[in-house]
Structure formats: C-alpha cells, structure tokens
Image (cartoon, rainbow, N blue to C red; front, side, top):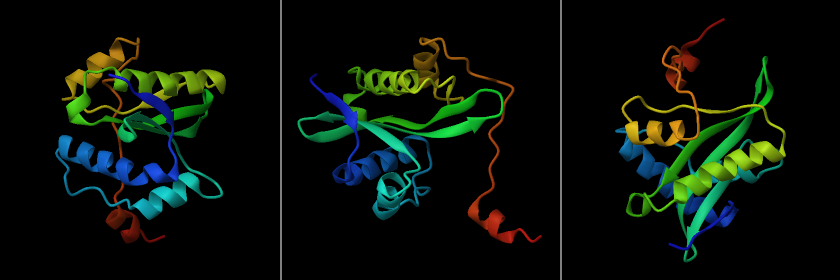
Length: 157
C-alpha cells in the first residue's frame, strides 16, 4: 500500500477528529471525545502550538496519525509524549502505524530528545507487542492518575 507520512495541516483536522473518535470507540469510550475541530486548530496551529502531529495519507485521505507534544522531565529534560497513535481499522497491519511511530522517534532524534513516552492500555496486547519490538519498556508498577473536569472545578483552596 502506498502512503505518505507528513506533518498535519489544518485541512487534516476533520480526518484527525474522525480518527480520534474511532480510537475512543476502540477503547470502549465512545462518548468520551469532547475536543472539537476548533480546539484542535487553536491548540495545534495557533500562535503557541501545544502539539505536533504526523499523518499518514493514502490517496489524499488521512488514515492514520501520531499526535505528540513536548514535556519536561526533571531527570531527562525535554521529552516527547506520544498522546495517540491511531490507524483506521481497514488499513491496520499495512505498516502505517510503524511509519508513524518511527516518524515520532526520528523527530525525537533530530531534536536530541532523551525520552519518548506514552501510555498503553493493559488489554491492548497488539499495541504492547508492537512497542516491545522496538525495545520499549512497559512499566507495570506505574499508574496513570487523572482529575476530570468536575473534580477540577470542585476544588476549593
């Protein structure tokens, strides 16, 4: 399958949102997506972009994406956090995910980044196997911790 990996543009935002919604369904959270195209535009293409995104394009249609952003580690300095690596179901297994993931790794190399990190669900054994082929370490002892919007708004100092 012929595809091209490139940085996302604003014209890709509707396809990116479609992929995000597909991922939410895959991860059993079909109603969890709240982000809008306007937010994706503002936060990815505004004056101070909060994220970068590679897309994989087949016949002018975006069928995969890797959205990532910079973080700071007190141990390593700047790191890259891969928020989502998504390939639409009909073209999984065609090396698109591999190309997107490797694009993020190569980006980190060119920026002299010392760590690329991400979160993977423990039941997503296909993804875990994929990442481990690259030598990635999947930590069992670390837990993801979050406050949702309601909990944030409930906070009183």
